[in-house]
Amino acid sequence: MTSRAVSCVLVLALGAFAPLCRADIYAYTDLSGTTHFSNVPNDARYRLIVRAPVETPAGVPADARRAAAWLARSADYDAAIARAADAAKVQAELVRAVIVVESGFNPRAISRRGAVGLMQLLPTTARRYGAFNAFDPEQNLHAGARYLADLIARYGKDKLELVLAAYNAGENAVERYGRHVPPYKETRAYVPNVLRMYRALLVQSAESGAGTES
Image 1 (cartoon, rainbow, N blue to C red):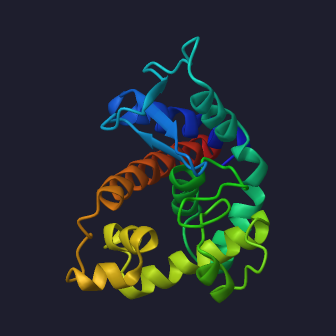
Image 2: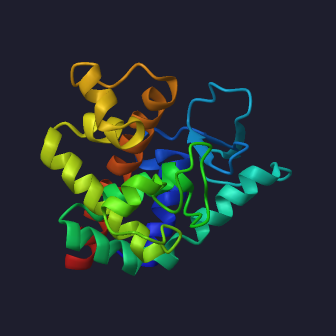
């Protein structure tokens, strides 16, 4: 998948999941600096950043422009994402989807809970997987990909909703609620957002592969 293709699908999939549903995309950046994306603006802080068909309206707020800029820089991490995904034996599209929703490709992002970097790792998780400088993109990506791999091994690749719920809320929360997605507002929004992005990236990868073969 080329850098240009990745950049296009991030705009299309995030903005419209364009080949799939052609919806608008909204974003806001919270006080901790984490940017949230959705095609359902169920929070008053959301502002429109992309309308289907894809366009960036004039006069969008600073946080939305910042989100778009982070996505435009996503190609900078293509090689590192591929290395981390390959080493952990997880799909690069899943790693990318998590990054989009977690940090919008901002390697300096810090959440209100103290999660840092591209894949928003808590310090304890980062250290567990060898990322002693979690702001370093390479370390962050390798640790996050390995964490995803362990969660997939625990819950199964056919239960990605639980994998992502555990990534967001922690394994203990998923277990506490009987291996179901915990009833937390953030997690209930997070899981479908990542899954939509992941599916859109898979579609783009398949189309890119078909185009290469022809």
